[in-house]
Amino acid sequence: MIHAVAVAATLAGPALSWNTDVHQQIAYAADELLNPWTKQIIKQLLEPSAEGSLGRVGAWADGYRKTPEGAYTNTWHYIDPADEPPSFCNVHFNRDCTKGGCIVSALTNQTEIVKGCISRAKLGKIRNGEDYTCANAVKFLAHFTADIAQPLHVSGIAAGGNGFPVTFNGTATNLHSVWDGAIIYAKAGVTSFNNATIQPFFKNAVKRLRSDDFITSTADMLACSDPGTPHKCAMEWARDTNEWTCDYVYSQIFNGTDLATSGYAKGAGYIVEVQTAKAALRMATYFNRLVEGNYRQRDVYLETVPSWILGPAGGI
Ligand SMILES: *[C@@H]1O[C@H](CO)[C@@H](O)[C@H](O)[C@H]1NC(C)=O
Ligand SMILES: *[C@@H]1O[C@H](CO)[C@@H](O)[C@H](O)[C@H]1NC(C)=O
Ligand SMILES: *[C@@H]1O[C@H](CO)[C@@H](O)[C@H](O)[C@H]1NC(C)=O
Ligand SMILES: *[C@@H]1O[C@H](CO)[C@@H](O)[C@H](O)[C@H]1NC(C)=O
Image 1 (cartoon, rainbow, N blue to C red):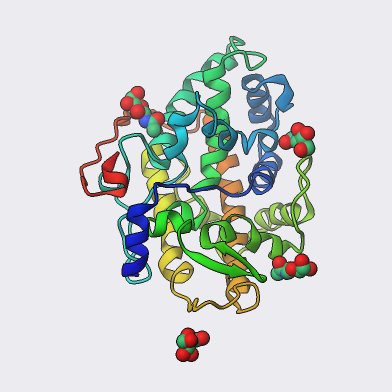
Image 2 (cartoon, rainbow, N blue to C red):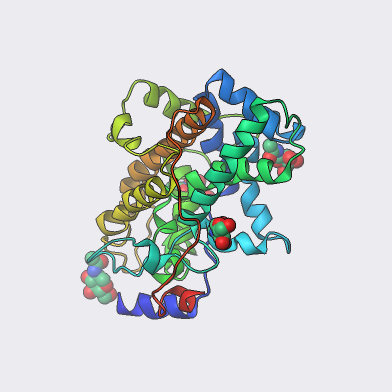
């Protein structure tokens, strides 16, 4: 792992994201779990082209981070903990969140923004997504609730695994990329997902969520889902995800083996399956509670205080 840490220091976070189609599918699954009132409010907050669907906007934030005006959101998609999987795993906000923001502070801020947006939408003051800050805040929540469930978005080693070379099905790639797409495609038996509607693999995930049929119970998945404590919940989600990096992601023998056939992808498939379902359930539940006002408003600290000066990218 020493080698991997050295790589982390030289790679300036090209961390990607669940692939576009995977993001869309997670959010399409969340769409199925929204209450009618939530759907109506989301429809008002999003531009008409979104047709009121989180699925259609679930990947928007990845395009935005690549534009000049959206570049400042680049670090919001992940948090790079200074832990050492597989020996020890942990996430600490003030140590690991960089000055430009991380997925935990971004979720916290965007939750606070969305609260105000929902109040105005309920009064009919926002109708066709004409408030860009609000439309974007919904899209950010639909994206970051998914990214925070991807183990390599909560892992500092080798810049989220981007600098960790592996072989998958005969192709040289990196560990981050494999977790973003290849593993779930293999599990679902597809090469990609259609981008227009929810696909069978995710339809089945919704069905299984409804019957509480995953290895993790839905009650556990939603142990924190209170929009009144966005920072606490984002940290809980981050820690829950980060555990997989010790438990599985980096605890296997790599040794140049092909992950598609070595058994790695098979084991990872169960993890990705539950993590994507969890993300969809949390996303939908969070929006439902926000719209229902099912939370108590508390103060949140919106400022990030990175104090680990030797942290990822020198704490920048
Ligand atoms: C789906 O992909 C097509 C082709 O790239 C694109 O034109 C369309 O806008 C995409 N739809 C969504 C909802 O992303
Ligand atoms: C969160 O909001 C605070 C206060 O507005 C701001 O200073 C900070 O940059 C924001 N961080 C993120 C990640 O949005
Ligand atoms: C590996 O690649 C072959 C040929 O492209 C493809 O048919 C197969 O589905 C792939 N297997 C996995 C697990 O991705
Ligand atoms: C890893 O590679 C080394 C050197 O090639 C080899 O001796 C060892 O058996 C390999 N271990 C596994 C588990 O494949």
